[in-house]
Amino acid sequence: MNTAGERAAAMPAERSGELLRIEGLHSGYGPVTVLWGVDLSVREGGITALIGSNGAGKSTLMRTVSGLVPARAGRIFWRGAELRDATPARVLGLGIAHVPEGRRLFGAMSVEENLLMGAYLRRNDAAGVARDLGRVYTIFPKLKERRRQAAGTMSGGEQQMCAIGRGLMSAPRLLMIDELSLGLSPLLVEQLVDALLALNREGLTILVVEQDVVAALEVSGTAYVMDTGRVTQHGESSALLADPAVRRAYLGAFESQGVSTPRSGTIVV
Amino acid sequence: MFLQILVNGVVLGCLYACIAAGFSLVWGVLNVINLMHGSFIVLGSYLAWGAYHSMGVSPWVTIAIAAPLFYLMGYLVQRGVLNRVMAAPVLVTLTLTFGMDLILNNAMILAFKADYRKLILDPPLGTVAWGSVVVPVDRLVATVFALVLTGALYVLLRRTRMGRAIIAVRLDRDAARLMGVDVPVTYAAAFGLGAAMAGCAGVLLALIFPISPLSSIPYLGKAFVVCVLGGLGSVPGAVLGGLVLGLVESFGAMAIGPEHAVTLSFALLIGFLVFRPQGLLGKRGFE
Image (cartoon, rainbow over all chains, first blue to last red; front, side, top):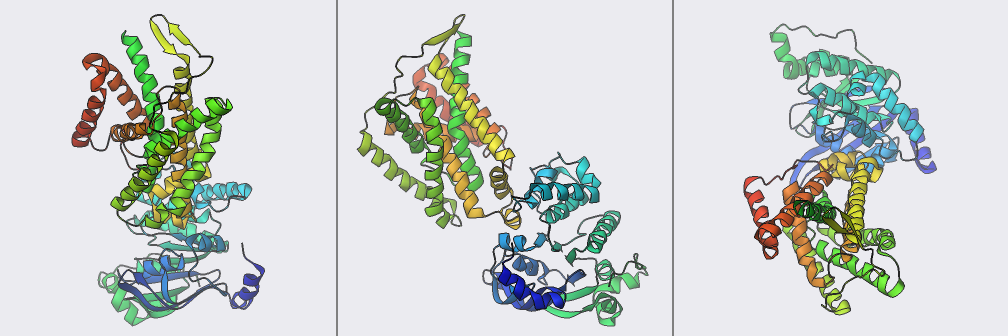
């Protein structure tokens, strides 16, 4: 997919380990501007979390990167090469898969048809698609059991597995997941997180939007805090987790209830 | 007598299903009510008539020519014209196809005159009889072809890459874009398939009904009724709706006279719109 020129341009960025870089990004819908100059960098091989309250622009940021929403100003670089104004098909072809908010499965299609839609662009790679289908079924055995079932009739957790599996079927380098845990039981979230950590260890870079700030900061190496269309804080997740300002803004409720953080051993840096 | 009417109804119903399947696809996937559908059918009939009477090409062969030809025509109409206004309200596309239908229909009147023509196979294929039930062979073959074409559309939508893209765009356009589907191209493919189904149906109908540009409106009306009966946007719905309409017309014509068959089908349309607007199999999602 990559031209020689893109590969050459990508060289310096790859040396620094940076996969995606966003500079001064403005974006929005119709007359409404949602992003007001976002700067963000995603390091290769890591897990980057994007946290912030509702309406902060996290989803819009992902939708702009994947080309669903046109950028108004600023730049997006993928491995050093300009990515802004690329079509969703091109973004996906370059290696960025987007698991959208609300999962957005094709409800009337079977689980397997949904997964194959994820591999829509790999038309000349039947062997690779079959291999990745097997891999998704190994990661999420539930999906194999239900592969003939209409995706819309499954539980929320199974649908999220299917949505992530569909994202993986494009064989991406970067997986962007919008709202991993929304509406799912803690046990299911735990399973999904374990699966993602395993994928990350195999080399998949992950950018995740997550409501559960504690979980997001524990699992990720780097995190960005967004508020009203801007990045207000960023840094190592462990540092943000210890930051009094972040704790007050996002974790106050947990501390006052005396709830201990559940997965303190799984910090990935 | 009962069996004869039943067989007539089923024959008619299969042809109606074939007429409506493409119309339903375009309406369901693109949210475009293609008022040219009836004229596409008539154009297919003229193609069959011209190919047979001037070049001796059998209608069964003409189907294989009509399908790619009409697909290409539909594809180009969608890419060149309709894709420009897909974001506009449905009334805009409706008006646009209405205008293009006027042009196409009047062009056919100029080219072929408004005279009724008939494709007459020579030698005739005769009839088959089972007991008291008699069916002309050409009708029987046309029915089988109508079923095969409708079935082929179903398989194409379910089993091919292009078909899955069409269904994905219908179910969730933005999610389909995230899978890398090119939406304007997929719209054009869906419209092309709708046109191909219309053209092939026209070839089959040329064997049974007289050909005239004036037939386009009744054909369009049938497509409408079948879509409302069966439920919009599914091939099985079109087959079910077609069969119901064929049987109702067939038995209705027997009971209250053939001159009331059209009244009956539109009464059915109104009844369904009032009491069951989603149709018999109506649901979201093209299958």
